Length: 350
Image (cartoon, rainbow, N blue to C red; front, side, top):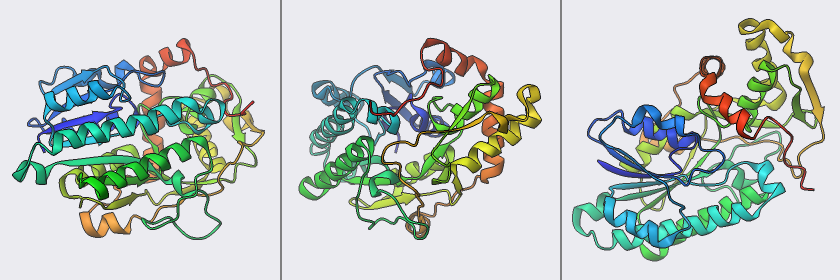
């Protein structure tokens, strides 16, 4: 796997994957990213000096351009991460989610198929299309149980419905056309370089500024947390050793309620930046998100058993390191707060 295409490579998970792939000096990475509001150019700044790195500003919905890029790059693997991802924004404006997540996935699958059928031989056998999805396609769990590769799809939001549709397209292209697709369903990611609309960076930045820390409902919704660098390792393994047609669930085994996450961020900041301490006093319970799934949890037994993957990051240590990264990298996140999103409430659906 020497030449890779990463769609959405300037995003949170995509950028972590690019940093990992380019740690091998023999690997070439072409990023396709149309640079939406959530794409920060500084995210991949340190990779620009690497001879194997290239960024093409393009929209995955542009089918002709995707065919052109695939033919020009001639990749061994495609990692498809380009997506609209924020549930709250999908409630307020679902159209972009249907376009990027469904039409964009279709365009990428067709571009990959057109390229792959011309390979043949060993090159065709090696090629992989890694489609990156989410545990949210499975809907909500009760207090017990975990999601597995055979869990029933039951999406609740426009975001998760669009990702569920994209998953079905990817699996259908493998079954119908033989395209060597591997699908990943992951749990909530955290770590450095995450756009500040998501829970952990939003709480960090609001707390630093002494702003309210909005917690939906009673804060007891549960998520399974996975460090983004562990996720990137899993995706690389899927491209190297994943079996076409297979699905792999990737989870960090770190279930926490949303309120526990916010309280832990407050505890860390009380020690690191006590200006607004106690930061827990900033917590504000707000109107719940419509159709807010109660609990997600992933069983990663299959990827552990078949590909030898397991998470390496302890959650508490990983969260502290994440807070420290935001404290040390104001030059990354401050322009994001200045140019538009300043922590305001999204997802009311009104």
